[in-house]
Length: 81
Image (cartoon, rainbow, N blue to C red; front, side):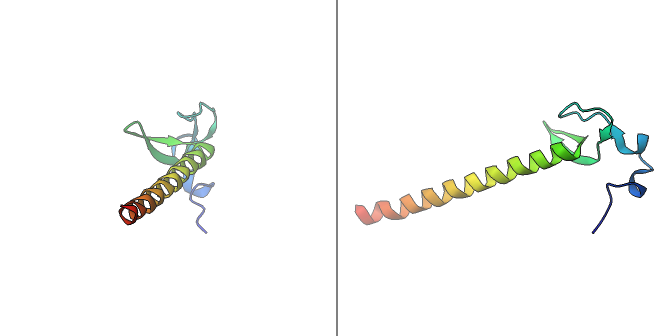
């Protein structure tokens, strides 16, 4: 498994990849994960990266469920008419 966000790979970055997370405001944390937030590409911390992934996963699951429900109702409607 890759360890790109650990010690050796981040030594070339400013302050060894540490700084203030623009999303949560925590200071002196590793800000290594690039994400697009409000049209800007920013580097965020590990916790915010996980939170954004979980939000996206929940939205995808809700969208898939809504599409399945819409498909089920559209299949039933012509059969009743």
